[in-house]
Length: 458
Image (cartoon, rainbow, N blue to C red):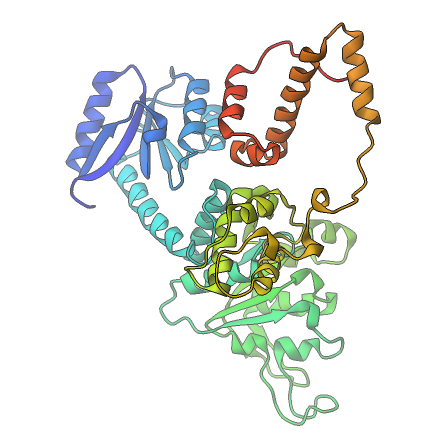
């Protein structure tokens, strides 16, 4: 433990004498504890002190504010015994761990061990962010899970839509793996396995095992010995090979095609798929026993629409790769990127950045004129058809029938537009403001006011 390691804390207990004793014990162990009155001041690892009488709703509200700060980890410590439902509620609210001070044998070591682990975890996450770019809370939580998985010895299943970066994450898990004698990461794309020869791709073959087998060949399993075998798009693996892979995982042995000799292979399996493998199990296209074997630890990568705050950092990263770190990009380009949808996720964003950068001539900033016309939004296309106003007319008619005048109708529609934009951007006021082309402060004021009994367009 570092001497005078600075750690913030938030007190939610009235047992001040006991809290003082706990703080003294922790400071003797090398912690420098300092109280924060405002949650937005909390950065890095911290401790939340509470007891059974603490207001859970107040704690949850505070945690929501704390979690807005990137890289924050919170340990909840109860000075007395805590009911089970409260523990789960705290975890759902964003606490990384929770325990009762009176229920563990060495509470000081429990606290310091967790803080030390989180410090190491945050260091690794910060390093990962240089390659797996993004600073949103959703992405940081994902990267923390990636580091946790890499430090374990579990088989890993990475799920997520196409273009979310499953192969990149798999390679990072291999790089972070702490095995001292770790060898290579061998990649097999299950969509490219040729029927009839797929067993050879995985397990190798003997000379003469089939036509054109002119020499003995090692497969991916042998090449991954003492390393990592990454099976991309695992859901495409044929049923016959699923049974052979299951035996290899269970027994650590395999046979080359055309051989009767069992060979040993020890490797870590990392798999990826954009399919719902449990649904495939129900349909009978994926073995249930294999599913539970490969999914020792499952990581769901978020779609780009779930981490829209990362669009600009990702775009900056891709522009720097293509045009150099000093390339200037006009703000209007980033506004355009933020308002666009990406069904193909990060891969689609990267391809769009490539098209924009390729069209940019010579020196100077990249501007909206560099956006290829095929990528223009609908509202920028000349002659674009205007949307039907039937629904809007019906809503305005309803408000007129309620006796509202022009100003009231304008105010009502404005409030509804704010609510829709904020909801569409999942509460991100900056993105909602960009969509509405208004200031973020206007939406902040809207959220603070939240007028009761507001009329709706029916």
